[in-house]
Amino acid sequence: MDNTHIVTRFDSELSEIENLLIQMADLVSQQIKDSAKALQTGDDKLAKLVSKGDSKINRLEEKIDEKAIRLIALRQPMAEDLRSAITTLKVSNCLERMGDYAKTLSYRARKIDDFSPMKPVLRSIVEMSEKISDMLGTVMEAYVNRDLSKATKARESDQEINDKTDALFRELLTYMMENPRNIEPCTHLLFISKNLERSGDQITNIAEQVHYLVTGELLEE
Image (cartoon, rainbow, N blue to C red; front, side):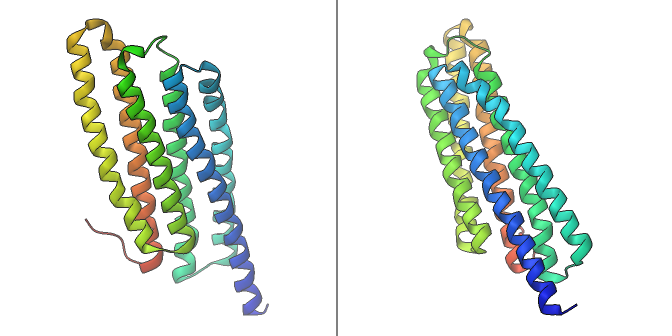
């Protein structure tokens, strides 16, 4: 078989996988924003939709992994091509975990009937979800375009999420100290903020995979 034909088939199949990753990232981004919105507005219907929507993300991950493994097995890529194929597996895993975090957020949003005493915290959580959505868009653009500068930008933005999580922790402790009745809802909000922080960590992981994809070297702290 003509080597040019083999390369063309590999590029075509890899492009198909990367398009699926973009679809997956778009779904995850919407899930994160919707789960935070459901929390802020007390929209139980929206929270349930987020929970059900996680299955779509899981199916996409399975499809991506199947195609990536098949691509590696049949095409036996080397060097940069092999890195590209392996990276798709790792990126899909990061996105799947982010989907899980959004699903968990939607569950916790339905556990408490009234989060209104902590309205400022709810606004902060929505802001965090929007920031994470923006970061995810940036890192996926970096992945598709092999853009190290954008990968670095997404990675560095994670510090802002970490700082917001720390600030929320202190704020929620204050609410709990003021009124014991706030302990249960505040505990749920602590877990929610932690899950958003973990979503930021997954974006950092994707950014590190972009660095590996482009340079062939693992990023060292």
